[in-house]
Image (tube, rainbow, N blue to C red; front, side, top):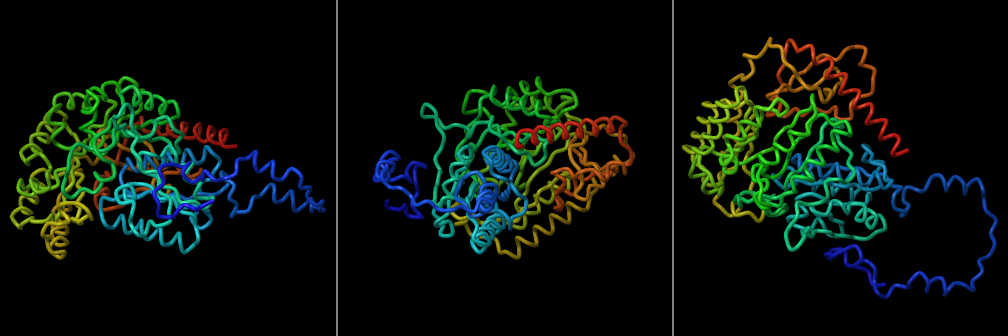
Length: 523
């Protein structure tokens, strides 16, 4: 049969099979008169081979797969879905990259360093003769990159077909599924929400409420991958939340490229979804809202304040400002002005006492002057955001901002350092030290010596882990982010509410039940 070119984009798995191939009955007919010569078998060797297929076997479902995911919580959720489907089919998901037969690399296209890590991982996999499947926003946005040649790609809306892509890759084929899911000519949110899933943290469920966005920011490459806004129906999202709680989850994160835009394409809105979700959140569990841009939350400020005051919803919101210069925002095509952002922040701080507001800032966007940057510095000094994500601007290929006159690299670096210095000049949690806090424990510290917990404002705290528990198995999500931004979220509380011990016990009990369930399913 003629082979498919490695860099040919196949519309579907079935395109691998040539019409000239013999059908099963034709093959059987051609060999029915052939009598194989009897051969003495080594029974012991045969049994050993039966029980232990060779690592280079092309029989699907017996290989070990190593996965690596970069980027946002949406991408992490996609990775958990892919791992769940592969494990359900029989593949072993391993944490040891060297022993894996196939590497599944789930990429992020937001910044150059993330893509550089992705590219380096591909090169390393090729050097070690691993089978490779690429996923995430980088190959979706630019599938014809030279370094993708001959490699299989699964698109961001095709993750429910990851088993097919892995199967064909193991057989030596190069497969690319990059299409969009549609119904009645309308783009859907993506893969089904009821797929099998292996959570990195079994107590936290990440639910993507929509994919894509309504904006056209001049610096954003993610738009090229995720496309325009496509929301999941409310009933499907509520059902996914209920299913997650039944599986032992005690915290849900809502995520998307812009949570605030949810529902505008299907005739609903974010508050309508949130009120439905609140109804199914059990006592002791919490809901965390994802990132929302200022234009869309402005339409629902009153309702959002009521929701953020709900006892089972974290009083936390991530609202990126990116710059405090209207001139820069206009060049970014952010569709709001600094006054809009301040209105959102001021309103929520007044109506939701103690709320934690996180924001993002890009340093060195093309055309940013010293005066523009100083306006951003003043915004941070005035509001003293407890969580601030500072990003040096990176021109992403194919974006309008990449064609603009760039700020010198040294200037971008210096502005990033200067803003970081301002951020570290204030201590937003000093006034809370010594307080008693009711918290929800969902994980352990990287060294297993502490429980990691969050209070109602999603402020992070550590509690010493009892010595009697130190010998128990480590939580699978024991890694704690330690970058400069998230470290500011760490709040060392001297005293915690007595209810914390109960919540710890409940959390560990749920984790034990989930482990028992997984052992039963996969054994």
